[in-house]
Amino acid sequence: MSRGTVFNRGTKDRPNYTVIIERGRDPVTGQRRREWYPGFKSKKEAEQARTRLLNDLDNGRYVEPTKLTLKELLDEWLEVTSTAVRASTHQSYEANVRLHIVPAIGGMRVQDLTPTHLNSLYKRLLVHGRADGKGGLRPKTVRNIHICLHRALTYAVRTNLVVRNVASNASPPRQPGFTGKEMRTWSAEQLREFLMSVSQHRYFAAYLLAATTGMRRGEVLGLTWDDVDLDARTVSVRQTLLSINYKVQLSEPKTQRSKRCIALDAYTVAVLKEHRARQEKEHSPGAGQHQGNGFVFTTEEGLPVQPDNFSKLFDTAVKKSGLPRIRFHDLRHTAATLALREGIHPKVVSERLGHSTVSLTLDLYSHAIPALQQEAADRLAALVFSDGWLQNGCNDSPEGSSEPS
Image 1 (cartoon, rainbow, N blue to C red):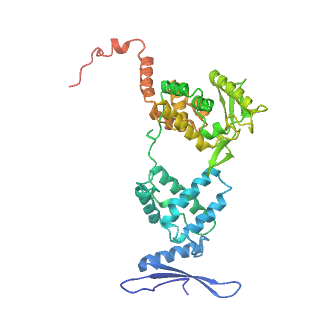
Image 2: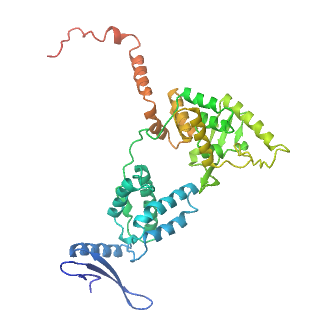
Image 3: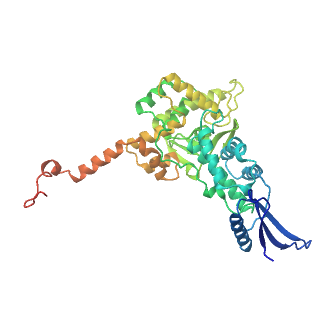
């Protein structure tokens, strides 16, 4: 008897072909094991599915039918990954699942998913994906949703719930080359003006540190005095302070390269010394209920600074300064851009930023420094034509030559 059959459970006008796979007898009960796969619109499509299923069975890739929905799979995957990834990463997965994936296709069976379903989801999110109903999500955001789905379906393949990862054949929005539209930076003069305007601010030293080192917000707020060597003029990035569901949480730095030692300039060191002296007064007897927990930057009570509140305070300070609006993270971009414009070697800039590769640094910031292209051209020309040949002799035709007709 054939191990697989195809028959039409519908009508001639509305066909509904079903594939039945024979898997022998159950070794315990002795009963025949048959798996049903309905829903094919043509006999040809069903026959192709039968051939594929039998081939998977012969090669050990066969998976039993299941009614598991995508929502159920995602819930299981989120639980499994909760201790396997950084808390901030898991938070972004959970938000993408809850806000964008489950409402649209969460009720579908995992084994029924196709690349077409995912492509339709991505298109819809690009047009109508915003929670406030005012347009679509950015291509980068939709790509992150695709990455989330791809990783969840990879888990489904590993646990033998599906044969293949359909997200591998989907077409998420392309990741365009970085254009700098999302990156806003200040000039050296604008940065100086801002720092002067916040010189009496409680977090002046934090703003200055970010602007002179390119440290991330979480790295600045996660810094403890044990990480600072004012005599050697260095800070060591060993941890980062995150906001997970508006709760403060310490975590490992973003990548291995993010764990780094950064040299400080003399002015930043002087400001940090003044900052520490003021903080020690807050810790002194009679100074109230100050916690004094070792962080370089704290609230007035000595508690770790809530990152979201920190960003709001920065936004307010920028608004009061009257300068072009930038985010706190743009201080990092400003530090990198100014360093590269001053001719500091990209590898040094990359190491200070904690980037994984120098190429990442150049990809991010080359658009912001077009003057370097012109400078490179001029310096190369000066090297080749330093004897004045370009001005004195390049227009003279060599003896015996003739102009082409």
